[in-house]
Length: 363
Image 1 (cartoon, rainbow, N blue to C red):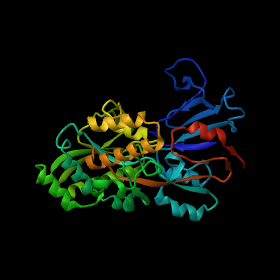
Image 2: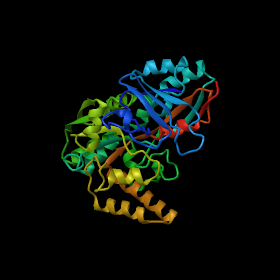
Image 3: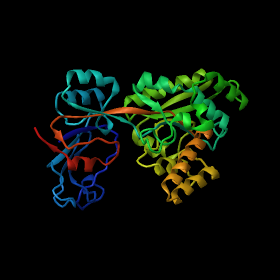
Image 4: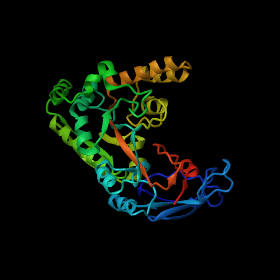
């Protein structure tokens, strides 16, 4: 089976071998596939793990991950049957390419998914000017979320701190209470808040974005930069190679602001606690809000489902008021796979091995 990955996508590899641990082929694990070889900038080849603990899995003999950094090339490979699953992250197709592909390749399978990964602008809230809630609210008012969807992503919906794709735990924007108004695109109110905070002429800052998570994210960041400029915030765009981005910016080592996906939501705790808790290593904004941390710890201790859901909803309302992270949209992504790929179901996780282990090919 053949599938593409972006050049900078982090891999979860679970082979069952030993040896020099400095070599990627000698990683240790209990997953369904063993890495046979890694050809830098070309491909990674996995073979079936005969000792896999799930009986009769994997159904296929192996997987090839082709490293295809150019998105147009990857799409062309999918069109011509050189790869079996969609060419973008999570085996999806870009919305801009979707209608044409459906017209020329109606036999392929397509499935829409409202993403469980929110788009975010985050900033160093431990430093001025972002330590002032009026500045953060001004930034939220300055950004046209629907404009981002229409210009870049095609489809989606504004999101609170728990991405809209996790529907049972994510509050609709109109249920965010006092914080809902900060989702309104209102440049005039943004300029008023900036003036009230002591920045009547705006200020200069930096907006970082990685180039390793498809070009749509960079396009989005450029449009965010434009919206900010309209209210007086001059943000220099800093494009980062993905490895450097993960080693610095995502560890909280940055200046100014960052446009990024942040807080993947398989359950509500991870995107909230990891993002907002003062003791979280993923607290990239350097946030320390005792009230918010107490709420996060309380939901962890609460066993009753409905009582915990109420706390989760209250956290999202409080986060919307404070705008420590300016949440933008959960986009609609469309997974795709060839008709001969059987027993396959797409989802947005990093567990690529288990999904490949349960499918088979019927050519």
